Length: 265
Length: 328
Image (tube, rainbow over all chains, first blue to last red; front, side, top):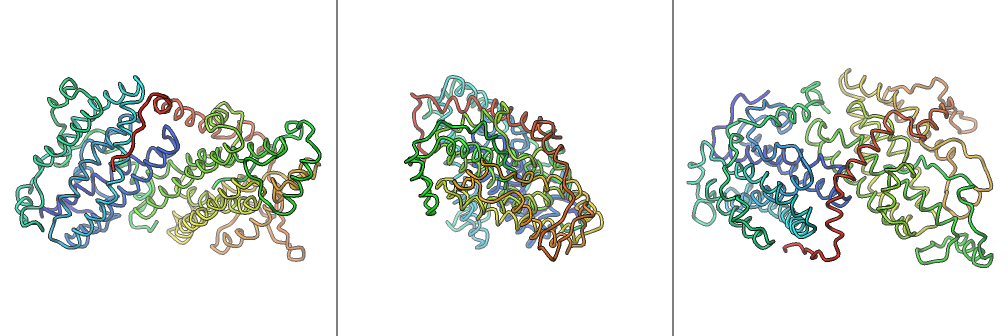
């Protein structure tokens, strides 16, 4: 059975967008398997992809148990495109390594912030889960930072490629922080600190941007001249409107599953 | 996976300068005593050459083997299968990393090895020149090709070259999980709907000949083979390994009510040996020489990956580049 509509409960909708982002991002990152620029990166992207798909599974499981969504396999592998809440950033093809690396850096820093805030939720199960997942994402951001720095400092060519990828990724990355219905309700939920645990998308974006720009400046990127701060976000994903790339991705991902959705594989 | 199906060099290719007879005798005594040879130890040139060739082929087989299975990661049905396949193929790429390092201890760089893969100078296991057409191919590769590779690798892990043996021990340990993964997909398809069962039977029919080819043709007991066995480079004959494989896995396939496309296949209970129709060895050599269904595609994909990643490797090689430490 497919869910006929998106969850109305604000927390459920938020968890669904986290889950969908992680699933689609993990799927994309797994496409580097066998194709990385060096074996070590092949292996690293595969590890990160496994974490991400694993995280999506953990969220789908909670959505299934608490909010009446279908089981994780059905929710992930048997849902129409317009009920997916993934961002445009994660849907984009892997492109060249510079694009995938910059996306990974932007994306995992945003995930780290979301998990930081989620780990202040009062709900014990979600608190424990967010705390555990934060520990894993820490390695993703280590990895991304290390490579961003190396390639921004590597050669003239690598620096130019990275700068050009940054400009390509940035507006898509801003779209991670699209506002969504139920956002203000979720902001009112009190967390373990006695204040709201979820700061809202605008505030998350400001925190994310401050961290990202600070790192870039430390790597010698002229942030002002790059024009990043004047870019507009690419929106739509959190409302179920997607780029041209999601439908073929879902078609591929569900190709075997759909041969017989009731069969056990 | 994915070792095995090793393509040996001709005796001519391994002709080495005459070795110091005293050193050669000491070397052979060490091996006879069961000692391991380590990178800085003296070794005959032919031993070094043969090992580089063998380990390099094994490493190439791991990265090329990741391609047919890798294409199914994005299509694996359901979380359990998707996560397991991602981890499995990642292991294989990790094995390549271990094996290239082991081969580097003998004096050939990873870069040279990868260049020789792309320019066709060095080989990889023939079995990866066949397409993985359906999800059931993932089951057959994961279960039976990995099983065949384990037979080969367990034998080789008792060889004489220390770094290769140690890499193989770790690889075999991980392979045993791959075998479970492959077996699980295999059994679920075999016991699933009629569509799933047909899918599996058809994959099995397609893969049987490549599997029979996997261990290579019957060994001719040449002086060359004899030397390699004495040096513990080659640990078991192709026929012995093929028999071991058939003995362990044919009953498991038959138990599930599946068939194999060889009417002559049976165990001769009086000798304990399996009888089978000899696979077409012309096909085998055709595929080795680049004319299999996927040889060109596999190398082309690898070549594109190498070319597209060249700027990354060049940037890392810069002597004046600052070393970036992770932000702890």
